[in-house]
Image 1 (cartoon, rainbow, N blue to C red):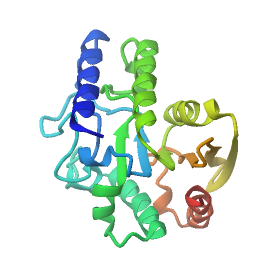
Image 2 (cartoon, rainbow, N blue to C red):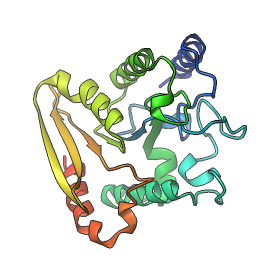
Image 3 (cartoon, rainbow, N blue to C red):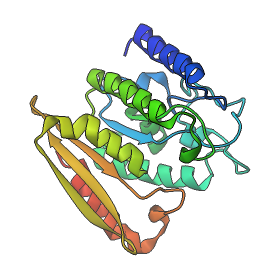
Length: 237
């Protein structure tokens, strides 16, 4: 994506942030701007930045010194050691191994994964978002624009709201799709995926893990075989 388009998107976020009454800051990309490219095939899209305050060392537009899941200090943990960061790093390692592109996991995260928020506006909880209906409408409009530019093959999510929105934007509008659920090894909780067979010949998959801050599936031995089965499906072309 060229700089002019990127700057225009960030300007739209800033304008809507003010117009919709958000006050706790916003974040868009969790990695370098260069990952917002039609060369990027894998995305990790999470719901929205959390917390009651905007950390002054967390840039709004992008994180140019590396992927935030590795380089940032969250809460009271050392950089990259928050439980959610650790789980996401393990997820990225699985994809790096399958794609076998010669990068380290850190290099893979910095160059080959689009990490971003579906809703860029911060809130303590999803339920606390001001003007939620209009905020969701803005987020869908934002991502409809972004997805029309990119050529993603796989979108990973960790919450139901983002999964449903991405499924709607990518899968359902194409008509020709299949939806599957997979055992997770964590009680009755499931992994799920929707796969679209697009008219241009591309296969696009939207996948969901249970929220990795609560369900630390990559640290649970009982989940390992189920993760392998799920990711084998997700990464199949």
